[in-house]
Image 1 (tube, rainbow, N blue to C red):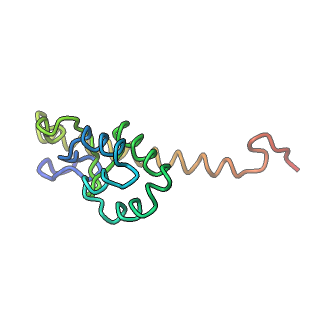
Image 2: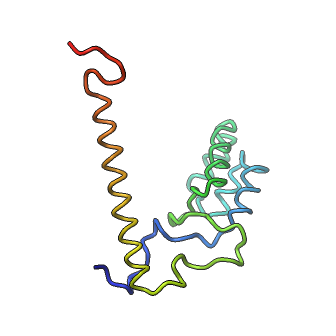
Amino acid sequence: MTDPNTPLPVAYQTSPRSRGVALALAIVLGCFGAHRFYVGRIGSAVPQLLTLGGLGLWALYDAIMIATGNFRDEKGRRVLIWDPTDYDEPYAELPAAVAAELTALRAELDEVHERLDFTERMLARLPGAAGEERP
């Protein structure tokens, strides 16, 4: 059992930045990397600025990632909240022991997902996969 007083791993923390602001910046000024500057990802914002958002493709990808809630800030936290005044840590209303258990379950599920992806990639490389004939 994990310690109930330990903070959530960064992968499960929510960024205090507004998803709505980030999405608006990505749509209007995405080619200049404004949304990346906004969430603190300066290291990737500068190349995006210099390449005009990867000729628009990188900016489009980022807009989709923000809209689906999969974009992360400079600390690796997901930009999820639409209204920054609604910011609250996930599981804040749950008892600490329950929050810790949910965090542990999510970590285990992530590991199972990674193993499944790896197995699928390995099976795809086998002869006979994807309709190939076996020798």
